[in-house]
Length: 203
Image 1 (cartoon, rainbow, N blue to C red):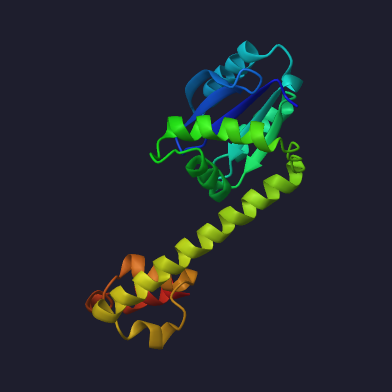
Image 2: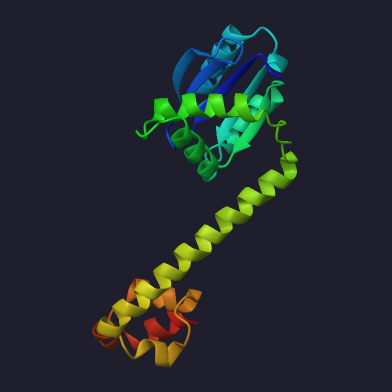
């Protein structure tokens, strides 16, 4: 069993951590740190103040979206055991301890106690290449979604400003269509344009 357990309540811009000593049943320290290299180093110094050896510390991270990934990798690379905690289980444990308020400080403290009580094995860290590919896949999916939203907005705008264009050119997300719209955004502007200039642009 680890000598010290640490709970980290994960946020987008900053994390909050609390250390807990199971043998003494008391919280032995708290820290708030930004999501940055400097912030992670501050956490590392905090952990070193709690226990001399990384093996004496087990850190529980609430698995919230993707915000825990960089910190988990940072800690694992430095020899700390890291446990990913299901947010639902963490909330249930907090309620079982009589905690009603939902604050970062209470969460970090409850997470540290939860790790001590459940004594889980450290979560294996994914292969760095696989983790990178997973992030790239997620990022690509977000970009595809953004692209779809943009195309739908373009369709809506053209329904008012240039309803003939989809019939004439088909897909609206081609280089040809977008170049034409950049130069002549309305039907009226195309009608007033020089015919040869429009043909050159389309070609």
